[in-house]
Amino acid sequence: MTAPRTTPTLALCCAGRPVARYSYRPDLDPRLAPRPYLHPVTTLLGTPVTELMPADHPHHLGVGIAVPDVAGHNFWGGRTYVRDRGPTERDNHGVQRHTAFNLRDPDGFVEELSWRADEQELLRERRTVAVAELTDTAWALDFTFSLTNTTPGPLSLGSPATNGRTGAAYGGFFWRAPKAASVPDVYTADTEGEAAVHSRPADWVAFGGDRWTLVFSGATEPTRRDPWFVRTGGYPGVGSSLAHGERLPITAGGTVVRRIVTVVADGRLSREEAASLVRKAVTA
Image 1 (tube, one colour):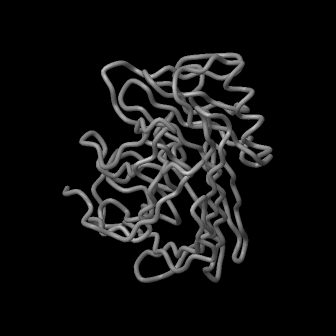
Image 2 (cartoon, rainbow, N blue to C red):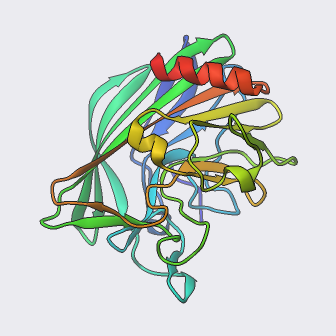
């Protein structure tokens, strides 16, 4: 698959420095489940901490919201996991269409999106993104999304895990980090390593490369209950699990809201430093 062609973007700045670029109308192959994304995202010193359309997973698009199963439609991209069949090529991809900016400032925006499949709107999203300086080496990305069911009846969100693939409950907020020669460290306040952190809730999850650290935290009670989806060995990525053990239902007219705050820091953070920065970021 080819890289996206030139599309409209906006820059996000922190302390007068550009730290992220947001593509809100990307021109992408339908098999990638086209959707707005943040890329590149960098530390304050300019180190990249996202990756776009990597060879191992071309449908990974920097930072954004992606759900592999919305009432049977694929808003994640790539193949669809089918129970008793495994990953399957299907013509069931949806698209997230930017419809408007309610607010657009150098340090954030409020956006309206329409999640559509087969020419029908399934969900309407309001996305609020803001950046804030924490220290001279760290800043915070505050990302809130609300998904409202605009269909006449109930629908539900699923994942490969709810469709039979153990350990693959991805879907929701997702951050694809750059792949490097060394596997990134991952740890929480009381444990470390992919096996220990993956598929479990935690107040925060730190993800560290050679010259950077990302610290993810759920900033609302529903978000804190969502287990984390973590990959380090196959590829580097962290996300939330909206549908971990069972499908997440949304009634007609109902809304699901999640807020994730991510610390983006230069250098390697200790547990104490990660916890301190998260507390500051969530209350900033």
